[in-house]
Length: 351
Image (cartoon, rainbow, N blue to C red):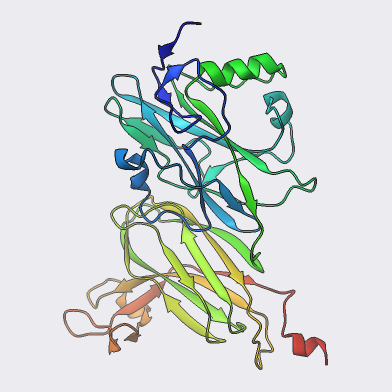
């Protein structure tokens, strides 16, 4: 086959690719990105030409929620739209689709808002598109010791998913060589501090735009614990919702985020992890954390009388008040609790 320039969304197999096909097979795509256990603060950097030469990471962290992204460059010469398809598949020397598509350990990745085929749209030639809503994955180790490989496809009307189910080596090699919209990347599994609790809860804003704050209520926490929570889906104009506490220095406390202006229909999963410290003190109860979305209300809000007084702002050490000088009230609109029912103060076990 004579060389030609790919006329779709290019998902590179290696950093130096410019779109010429056939191309050499590679398992080191810089466009399939494993960003780690926190989402990108501003995933729009993935669409920046200045970051296109950055390969980012291929590390995934066992037992943690991982945040992953895809990107590609528009080589169609004009506008194009489509969707992403993204898998984590058990490694094999040759990743024949007939093998991994039927493997029970293969993971079809989905975004923080629950999409398995998130859309993209490019208006201009050479424009870079990306999955701005992070794919999230709680990585479990494979029992046979293998690692995972990422496979990503940019699907458009002109270039559908080229993956077939056949198990012929030559066919798989031809798919990778002749289709610029598919790539693969080996990952490196990191076994570090595996959380004692990992949990995920979906959030949906519904059809009303409102201000929202997220409060986290901690109970019976051993001191020295570490907590992290994030929404992989950015809030338009404000970024992701994220909170890290390292270390936890109180057994029982409540902490909140800033106020977010949540647009109607915004949705995301909140993924959180908790690693217990060793200082249980006199804790006798079950450790738990409750996520509580709440609406901050000024005195003219129609539901003002139903809220509770917000109290002191820990940053200003002053009572939170509105422009009329009346207390801000908080209206709780939901709650979700995770409890470590199998964890307790070690000193109690000895009694």
